[in-house]
Amino acid sequence: MEKIELFDEHGNSRGFYSTANILNDLTGKEWLYWTKSVIDKPYPPNLCHKLRNQHGGQKPPDLCADLIKVFTKEGQVVLDPLMGVGGTLLGASLAGRRAIGIELEPRWIEIYREVCKRENLAVQTTYQGDSRKILGALADDSIDLVLTDVPYWNMDKLPKSTGFYKKVGERAKPKIKTELGDFNDRPLQSKEEWLSELREIFSLLWKPLKGGRYMAVFVGDLYNKGEYHCLSAELALMLKSIGYTMKANLIWHDRAKSLHIYGYQYTYIPSLIHQNVLIFQKPCD
Ligand SMILES: C[S@@+](CC[C@H](N)C(=O)[O-])C[C@H]1O[C@@H](n2cnc3c(N)ncnc32)[C@H](O)[C@@H]1O
Image (cartoon, rainbow, N blue to C red; front, side, top):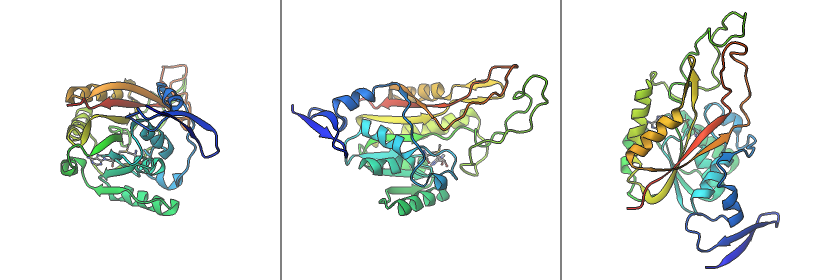
């Protein structure tokens, strides 16, 4: 085993990389940093953020690049079966990894391609269609990391209830407009339908994902009609029941989210300024 000192583009030491490292290209110092269970690093808007913002659920490519660097080595392959406007694929390009993305809606893939053109980045492999129909065509043991971001159940379509979100003495406010765009034109799903579609997708990921490799899954909890829905926990239980091993629940503090006082002096409603990043591993055969 050899230890090699690595330097960043400004000539500053990144610490020592060990040739015994089979998971990633990080130095010991960087590995230690990424064991933190809370990601509080700022990710300012970049890479045509305004254009990608049409989607409403896009993730910062730099955050995706950071996660990709923790779970892969240069040149390895990352898959996102729910790619949206391509946070994962752009992150893979920034990190020097190959990526495959699948997306139901052609318009999101078009935006991803336009971003690549404007940013002078090579376009990664994309497939348009339902992941449940496409994933079966991927070769067994061909993927080193799944990095994905599940649709927010019906959060992007559900009208918020009026009457709960008011201050004492105030009239109930009319509908509060959601920040999220409509991801697709499909009808509202019940939570059971949402989970069942995701179960199909994550079950199909089993064969292409190599044994011993990881999945990082963004999922936001939500508050609706007076109740907190811990979707991260429900999704985690479902992934565990497929056979994946849970390794971590990272909390990403999304600094772009602001605090609100819905319910002030009336009822407690949390300001959801975090998303969960569930880390699962496919056991080795
Ligand atoms: C939360 S968004 C992903 C956003 C992405 N991380 C980004 O940075 O743009 C989830 C995406 O999954 C897509 N989707 C939902 N069900 C799908 C399915 N069965 N097959 C493929 N894509 C699907 C939605 O259209 C939506 O764009």
